[in-house]
Length: 344
Image 1 (cartoon, one colour):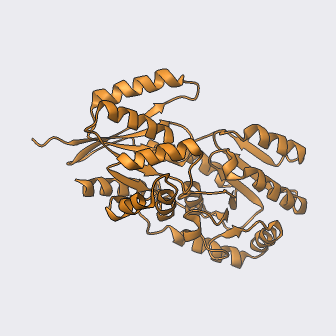
Image 2 (cartoon, rainbow, N blue to C red; image 1 turned 135 degrees about the horizontal axis):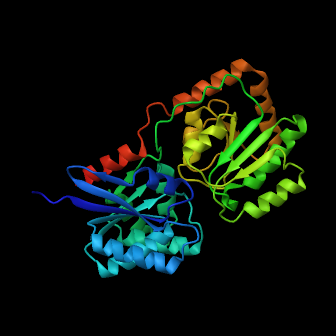
Image 3 (cartoon, rainbow, N blue to C red; image 1 turned 90 degrees about the horizontal axis):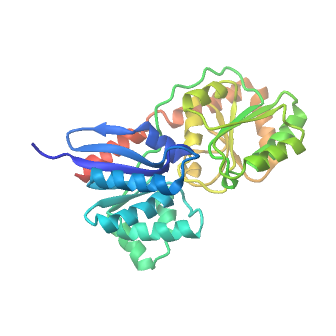
């Protein structure tokens, strides 16, 4: 009997943004070629880091994987440390953003890229820009690209059925991390101007706090919008969908992005995305075709929003284009299985 290849995907936490959601969607899988498992270094928010990492280290060592797929800088550092004890393990660096989060992220990602068996990414923009941001000589960057060890893995978790929206209303939603990089404060400022024109406007913000929640609550209170803006904690996509049923627009004014999973999810639901032209978003979002591109001009976006609210025909056309964008795309699970089967 041929031994199956043992693969482990290491992710820092079990809660949070798109990376964690992707990992949670594909916890266990076994086929003819390989067995796939996901290990979260921390399963609970209040879990002590050091004991959790030590337990994860012992567990992974015991499982003795042939391959490790590693996402985000804490997992990358953990995997590099693990490789010192298990040098035969091959690991695959999985990139999820076009920029390093900070200097330490860039340093560790560079080290991980140097030792990685392959480098995968959630989009072409992520792969190209992140490799260009590595803290290494240009000659090595060219080597990484030329050795044909890169793959793009779809970051669409599931094919999602669209919502049954017949009309457009001034109702907005966002789901994802509550962190400075997502520019949620700018989205709130934009919403406040829409509220001035329509007091029935609503904005629901959903996600785990990554450093912005207190600031956002203060901003909402200062703008006297606490009756119109609701901030909710991280929840499953099935529960997010219930809130999305009451929304027409999805706002995400990020400073930078990779694939932007929540944007693609919102579009599959049929929500009109109001987004910045960053990361892979600029590839699949086209202004006034299937999205509203924010260019630091509140007045233009506000005009376009009310144009769609007032015109059933224009709203119907843009919504049709939005849904068509993702109709024939593969899912994360499909691409991951395909990528590993190619590897063997």
